[in-house]
Image (cartoon, rainbow, N blue to C red; front, side, top):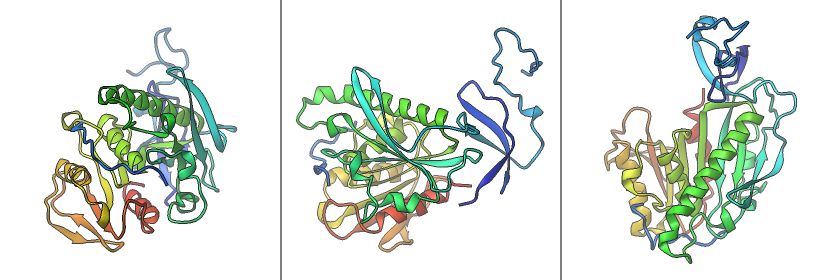
Length: 316
């Protein structure tokens, strides 16, 4: 991964991000049986109502690129590796941070959110071997945040369907809070935030990319639509995998929705790793890859590395 060094660690912008000039240096199965088609200022003495962290871009050196790094850049002690908890909506919520082994706070790092399937927990992705070993894949590449759903379910299929929209909103507030904590405590390149997940976690990754602009791309397996199509206001680069023995209409609808949303055709060409394909004629900047792996409702052995290879095309 190409790294960057800070030439100017400017003051913090109102949105909690830093404008900098840089120089290169086993969960319950989600069957899909329910498918929700769901001014420049004198910075030495700012006015009382001015944001002292707002740095005009014309004060920055005229170099080749401008990036957005998070407020946590340059912290001596930032967000620690391991488990973190906080209170939200009357519940104790949890997430796990895994830092790159070469993490430093003067470089803007990619950030990957990982979401377990329904009936699971953060432990699903917090492993160091096997097909789900995303920690190994990302250990030199990105900050990993492993999320955890309310009571282990991004959607509770045992609850009345009219409760599902409120659950979606609760989980969106959870991700907004976690992302803010990570941006305040770590040095993140905010143009390189990704989400990935399996089963219900993949389904909720679809919600995140539809409902929030923070997420650059997603990689998911065995997922269905947890959102209404009209709520998905932008196209998203997507890597999608489905097992040959779990091809049901709900999962195919999820795949086809993101393919069509990105302006792709149904025709495709082979890409690595086999048996993946890239859909053709996709809009610039929104590729969609589909991998139909052998087997049933599982995260495939190609999944973790393929996920990062797909995301890497968006990492400078």
